[in-house]
Length: 383
Image (cartoon, rainbow, N blue to C red):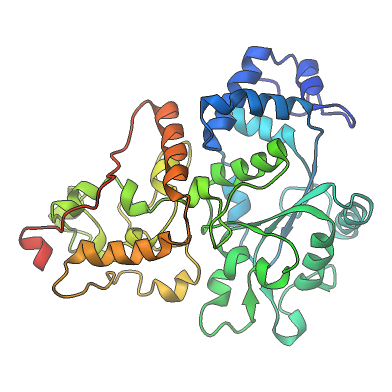
């Protein structure tokens, strides 16, 4: 594989011209486009459209702001699952400003940011990680002597698209948890005159971040979103409906303690705090580190990190979701989850696209229940 630096994408060239210079064959390009189409949930039928769009695009500039955050989202995106896809994504965009990844520092880096936002208005993509503190005039987070709010507003003013990556940029995350001493908020609380696409999670899955950006680069518009501004192709289905442990839930087989026999047998984690029934996320489908694992697969209950206010709303993390006496556990968790599902009208179609990707990449399919499951039975279900 050619490295991105061997044949840099020269200004003015289209992607098709650039790939030809790099020696990428038409066959390899179409294979890549098929992967993009799968990630975006449009299936193989969308491959020609993706190929046509990508071949004619010119390389967009990307500004990646890091505000009140831990850089976990940047760490995540550097670990995209498919090497070929990840390599070409690095070539699809020009990451011109990122405090963590760029070589420049201090005044030099701030000069780069200033030049982009003043000279390329309407031509760059803005990616934001981290929350924005508003108390005390924003003094809790300053960059180059300016508050995070000021930096964000200036960068957002000329952006062609805005992506809020991670729970911090989505709604504030741990910084916004009670009592929220810094007055931390998400990007949409500051930027109200433009659409903001929220790529939720703490951190989000790398493939979801890159796929959402590639969608904009490919089609010139962000993907369809739910009421929280999350891409439906990724956040249209509940973890509970795609979980490998779902069968144990239906059978009433639950982990009661993390060192019991149920834990050793990979039984359902509902009783030790799993928030999967109330959480919309593609974690069971995409997973992390080239589909190596994910929290529930590793034996830890979901904490609901793709949902707004999860630090407070999902606490205690090891306390189980409430149930209503007389209706059974599954009735309650489905009510909770489906209440959120009302925010995602296109969830079923989005999940179908994500499942197609899973099958095509791993040649195996997770069980997905299309009908409401029966309440769990057995002694462990009444404990």
